[in-house]
Length: 156
Length: 225
Image (cartoon, rainbow over all chains, first blue to last red; front, side, top):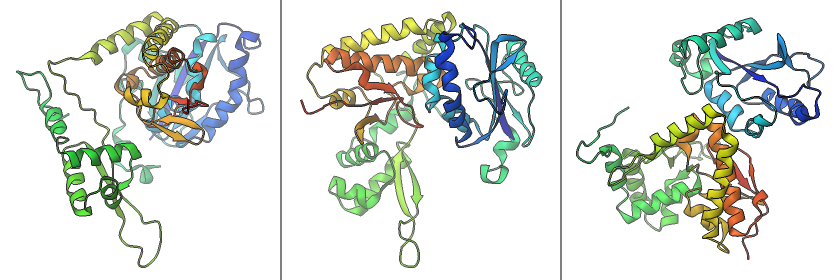
């Protein structure tokens, strides 16, 4: 099994506004960092030819990031233990504060390519029912029984 | 989790038992050496550093593993082929936290609750400002002292990495697991305040996280003056 994650954020200023410039400028280096990170499997791209393009959902101010990883540790080390962290630290410069959960993860079969509606369904489940095996967070994490029964070098 | 709590003391007996294993001065010196090296320490290396026989070092290192203070593993020899010998047994610090407070104290629960409050309110910016001021107050009490000694005294375990100073230990590790962005941002602000309070350049501290270490790195700090 692989770990899928999606998060949503609401921009304070439009993507082409100077207030969003540092964030937009960071997309290419940080996405490259993800692509080369240990355990990285896949990420959704809005436009394969334009690394600065954002994945919008319904509202152009609401953007998402969506990716698949081999394990919790791999995702954790990219999100919190790499240069990505400094962008998280500065997130309030670019994004509104959200009271609802804005990041969700769930297990998918190896090779499955998740869709945007699937991600929003998982996020909605997390928001309405709280964390469970189908939709969870780093803090309330659910191991996949099949994945944990096998050593990683065999399962991946 | 295995956990015996002494009802009279309110302290985990496991923790108390583990800490008593450090009473022996040789054992304690071996533990300190393994920790300072950041792991991967072989028996002969530890014995030489502490000035005891390899056999005695091996005995104490294995007792520290039994006590849950160290972990052991095997490292392949550097030379390959016949005559290169068996993989070497190496030691590193165990990740479990041990804490003994008498009288019993528990600050982590309160810290976690307060961190939840800050995140619910979206008050990270204020938390960083307060952390910076706290760092300035601490730093003012250490003006003109060497930066690495002050950081070591606060549990960061600094070490030189080229021109930079990195830190092996996060003193706020348990809290940072549930609130990584808030705690790391506050830690950076605290370190910057600490430097400012000591009369150093606060911008020498910057966010540069790596797996298993503190998220802050210090650059261009002159320790000679």
